[in-house]
Length: 330
Image (cartoon, rainbow, N blue to C red; front, side, top):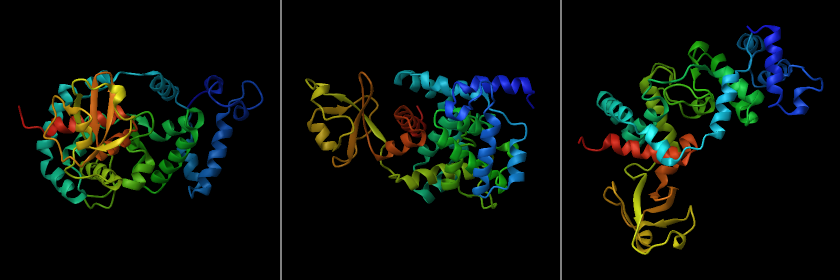
């Protein structure tokens, strides 16, 4: 529990991030206690008992490390090549192939049930937590409270915080196990609390949708998220291409334009290195250029992979990892 002096220092530090209208008119006033009182009222309206809320927030204070990480994320602008290289490393690929063998029957069962390619499920698991090996140690309630109090997207994290409290209050997971990465994602698939509400499933039939320890539930939950988004089984996520001789980038349609593959070919796009057999000419795709000299045609399944994390780089890398994991052994 923080001393009064440390709480005051933290309040002064956070005031720079907190709008003046909410930080309090008096200089040096710690805005956190008043904010917690306000949140408690919101939680009560959401059906969370006051005594339960008080237990969760007893001694709780914002986590400066979470705010630092949020700031660093905003400032970090890696190139696509750098982003991809740090995630498609040999260890992640080797571990993924081992997990594919270890969980082949489970993945095939989930793939049949949800209509989602097994290696896409495996790739998301690998990128999110290195196949469950790195799930994060930040207490989810503290992280979400920090970001709801002083982060960049306060209303979003406030909603997620209320869902997290409801998950705990209903007994779906003990508080000591509700830990994850700094922004509030947790479990094998790093679901935000609202994603757990919408997509988590109880595959093993034990009466709990356990994405935190249950591998079967976690992998099925990833598949369920992709299925509900409209995953197209057997359809490629993307196709590396190169510009044919004499084709100038400025002559191509604007970014985001979807055209049939046959039309892209007519415009001068050719299969690039690493391209598998091209799908039929009527499949519609859009051209993505994540950095100079890198061109890919992406299809509906890329949209779902990208949406999992909200990043084009993530979607392209997840698709590439899925291809590598399911490629024939060298």
